[in-house]
Picture (cartoon, rainbow, N blue to C red):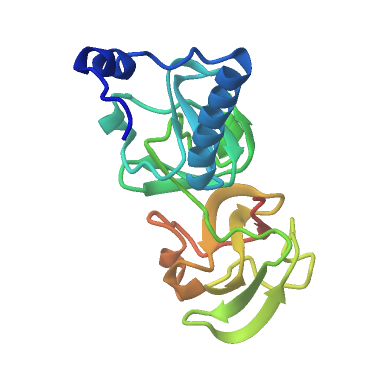
Length: 231
């Protein structure tokens, strides 16, 4: 039987603080914390967009990794410049993903002309946006139909076409579209100009049976150029 330990000695033994960490241990702990933060960021998904309230990346800013249905609820008055760091997004002129739509691929958009292009429709700010999850530039196919409800003569497209008429489409209009894979942006005029329509495989099951399904404010079924969305 061992010698009994006095209570005062036991209390002293329990109150002894652990030895101080060495520089190597502190560095290891910091590295583990950094790894944890990076893992959380990576789990957030491949989408990252930063928006500013004023042009040229000035004023209030906020970073997002998912959709924002109303930037006004975040204390912003509007979005007037954007940086897309990962993924592709579609921006809208009104809250709740309504109004004219604009493709936002990886890059800088210091002012409204950078995302709207030459459309003859002045949209100086955006108020909502969402990621485009099915974009796959290397595996994209879309079928154009000469009649609504995916009827009539059809033509399959697997590449970018700045002029549909030049590639053989006989009309300035495309009444209905079936997205077989990937995501596309269609334009009203040749040369990727005019109103933009974002067409995705994972929405409406890829079926756009009438021109008014191309967007919430589709003015015409006139489509004269189309391209794959970069991811």
